[in-house]
Length: 389
Image (cartoon, rainbow, N blue to C red; front, top):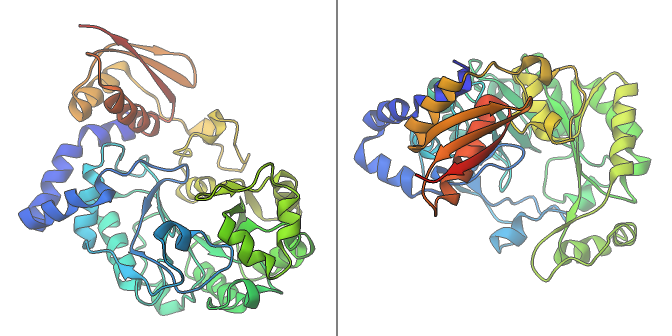
């Protein structure tokens, strides 16, 4: 049976093991937490060691989402083991190396001094009980001692965010400077990790003149590759960037104004291609998405199926050559044990599996959970054809 399907089938036993360790109160806390039900994003299932960030980066949307400005982070109330139980209870989640990718850094910096202990506790629990490829993004300074605390029995993909060398003091007024982050890359590389330069967001009007120097510095300090990401803006972000004269090139690319609340992506295909080209010329790997870097470090096919969705980075990981074999009986068992669904037939259409299930109406949510979990477990696109009982 494919490793991902085996792990999906065994989630009940995994939860039982963790429940014995955390007790009834820990189980209650874990199930009340959004990690137990949050759907994954393209980069993976986001894990939040804390909430909030004091760095005050002008392009950051975290304050807009949380309704606060720069603020000292509040640590997650769950222990590492409770967080592991919450993930094991999440219907979208597939444990294991061939399971759901985990991503830390969406609404906080996981290596901020107030969160380091929580982040390492979570990583240790993931390493001991789940085994999922884990990625973090940070602007913090990580020294050798801290780097040695990161579990070695876990696939960890570090992303170090640097978007400008020249104007970091203006754009990221309270974050450690680029020099400290470059040192973090060096430390992590020396400790055996594969750190990547996280070149996100690309800010039009700024990045064009800095790409060559920035990528050269990252390589010199030991970066293995570069992960590229576009800028997303809200109205408050545009107002903040206008104070630095950076809103003009951004507005010139926007097809519409941001809504009163929410974000819009700034079209940046040309900038992405430029950055990826420079990275490759300098001998670095170039990734269109964070999940691609996580897959490369883990040596497994990308859990977001980038190659099937037209977003492949064409990196040396060769995801298509690593797809696991899938057996109809294994899919039947995983669907029944994890979701209570009975498969009547499985049709293999290459990179897509079509599963006939016997079910009543009103289960669209359950089918969506099962589809996303099975796509990860099989590394195939998945569709259901409902047969009425």
